[in-house]
Length: 494
Image (cartoon, rainbow, N blue to C red):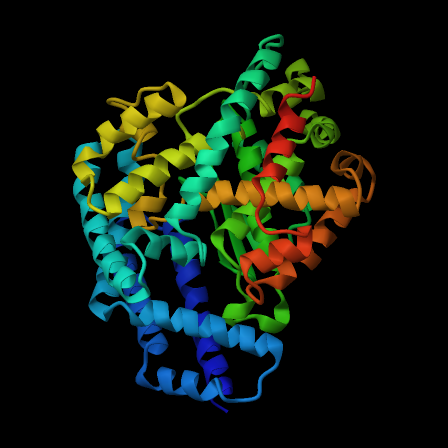
């Protein structure tokens, strides 16, 4: 059967993806600087082999034949995802795939040092090469899929989503989010939390993070924790690698970074094993992926009930400091304050960081602005949305994220979509299982939450569309009212 041949081909691709993921993890965590050129060439070669296997002449024949074979509902879903993957790959010539991989490796490696030094002049030519190649790919994809260039990139990360829909969602957020931010600010102005004073040894921060990972059900037999310039979750479901970054003067950021990435990892580890190596067994979309990391961080990790439960553990690692009391930690971890760094942003101002990036990268990909314009455009929008200036501080501005270094344009909207999905899942859990705060406080409540996520999200993988997953789990497709209700309950209830 042609379908069986397709499954075998994707098992081969999965093995190559495994090697690629671990090589990329090593590049970001342990590889010596001198190995970057060779590693970039090796990764480009793997990308080329994957592309060749995915676009080989026999693939179209197998796909066409498989359409007429008797398949189960799950096999049909897998075939649909296989065709989608084949279509996406077939649109781009091999030379462009290889060139993008090389340019991305070069840009990302240089960025690690350039960001710290706010070295825009050094970063600009590398980013321009990435953007030029991404524009070329977006143009090809857009023409073939009858989408705008930028929408063709969004579709890679959130199938079916468009910039028109995103604009409607973001405009709706703008109608009520500023009011919640003001209300939260008024409430929080009555209290000034005490900042924990370091140093906080990295070894103890790592121990604390590992404790949290265990509490959140991470499978250490199929994964590990390391250090990188930018926290990420990589690898494959059988071998998940997560990273964080440490600051000896601030343990709080690394702790939530670990919890966030553990959410990504649990999703990967919870994907259906019977579909391992097949497109239908992979994560549905980046927004669904983000919904899981944000659920772990925001719905649980920053929940007052969790911080009350975890405060004694933090004190065991860093001492009996009053600043580590639960009530103080709750105020710190849920404090609303505009800041420069997206990954450190509070939950209410975070969407502003995403809307800013969405608007900039759409204009950049569609040629309305150029790479050279980024520092000034970024500074202007930071002042507009967050009241902050990044002029002369590009490491805190347009150089702060890793995503653009490898051409991942269209990815950023996934974060705020993920936050809204997470709130919707949390609302459904509270209706079906019980109050999340009460579940966190109980001895065995967290496993009940994770079991709901496993059944309703993780095991669905890509066997369903995003809307189908949301509707089955919560009774409806995306509805921003869930997000609004959640934010009001967390931040405006005195």
